[in-house]
Length: 342
Image (cartoon, rainbow, N blue to C red; front, side):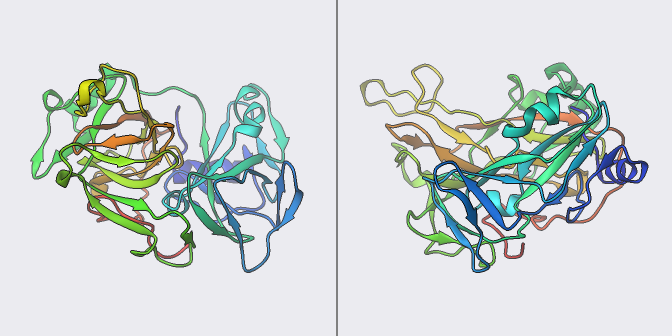
C-alpha cells in the first residue's frame, strides 16, 4: 500500500485529486477527521453528542459520518484509523462501513459521505462533538514490503532496530510474515469502571502499572481486559517507508500447568494494536512502539515478558518525505499512556 505522506496529501488536495472541505491537521501521513454533533446507534437511533460529552461503553456500537463529502479520483484509496491519543484510551474508529467506496471502487472517481464505526475495547471513554478521534490515511495501492524486501531494508539502513543500546542486524531478528516484536515487561492495565477523558491525563486510578517480570507463572488478565504495552525493541524507518503493526494474536502452552509462552497449543488470544496501527517515519523517531491490547479469549490470557507481541510490517510512501514535525510521543520510553492534549 503506497501511502501519501504530508506533501503528497497537500499536492492531492491542491490538484483536486482529493477533495475534502472539512478536516483538521495534516500530519506526517494523514488528515485528522472530526466527529459531528450526532452519532447513530443501531437500536436507539440518532444520538446527540452533548457539549459535556457522551460516555461510550464497551457495550455500545455507533456509526458516524464525515462532516463533509469526500472526493477521491480513480486510483486513490482511503482508510480511517484511530488517532493515537484516543487509541490509548481504547477507542476504535474504523472505516469498514464504507470500505466499498474507500477501496473496492478505487478504479473509478467517486464522491461520497464516508460512514465509520465507533466503539471501545473494554474501556469507558467520554467523547465530545467536534473531537478529532480519527485520521484518514490515503493510499494509491495495497502493496506492502515482502519479507525479502524487509531483509534488504535492514541491510540498507532503511529500517533500524535497537535492543537496549545494541543496534540489531537482520540476523538478530526473527522474520515471519513480518518482524517479530517482543513484549516489554512493564504494562498498564485499565481499571474497569474508570471513565477516561481525552482532555484529562490518564492517572493511577485509571491504569495499574504491572511489571511482568515479577510473575514467573505469567500475569493473568480476564476476557475484555484492556492494557497498554510496548515492544522491547526500538524501531525507526527512513523517510521512504511507514511501519505498521499487525493485530497479532498470541498463544500459550496450557498443558499440565506449563504456562511458558509458545505456539504449540491452542490460542488464548488478545488483539494487539487493533486501533492505531501506523507509526511515524524518520530515523530521528527511534523509539519503542506502544501497543493497545484487548483480551478476546473467554478464558483470559497469561502474559509473559519478552514473548511475541506482534509483527512489524513495512509499506512504502508514494515518495520520500521531508516532514519533520515531532510527534507528541517522541522520546517515549516503554509503554506510554495518552499524553494530555487533543
